Length: 221
Image 1 (tube, one colour):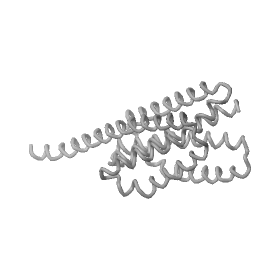
Image 2 (cartoon, helix red, strand yellow):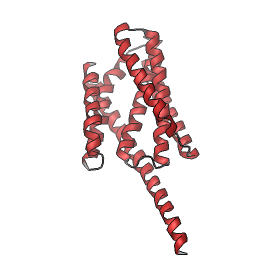
Image 3 (tube, helix red, strand yellow):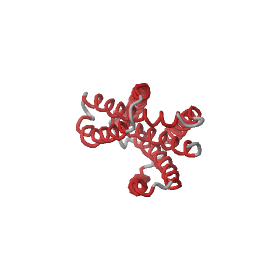
Image 4 (cartoon, one colour):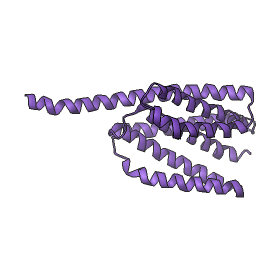
């Protein structure tokens, strides 16, 4: 009897820990998305210049690379996560304002928002329900991100609209892969820190939304 309990108990504890991680991650993700949307609204209301987007991007990247890894397991990690998502929301404001001023801008933004939500919910549900292990995608996704980033840097000089569209499509595919990969890490005990998972999923959602804006807005520009 004691042997049976000793084999069942660790499995039960692992399942409880996984469920707790998933709940905490999605709760935190919801809060950060709301906060980020509020900061984007403030940025739009203040009509901040596009330069703010660049400053916010570098600021959030610095926090992700240098601060979050050191604070993710402390109370300061909560502040760091909200600082990251708040900065990214602030930087998103000028981008949304730009698309809103295009013909049919309201429809562009709402379609991008709806598409982002549909992609995230569908992929998350699949990974959670199927419980498949997508860890094999890690190397491919990292290589893909490096290639896309290099292509984006190159397009800063060439300004090719077709390449910009192709890169936006590639980003959507890569971020979709990251959603499967990260959700699988939660389900299969590949990650135990909900703050790190929150930021990772938030970045995927953010990049899908911006890429959809670029694709949908290209025909109206």
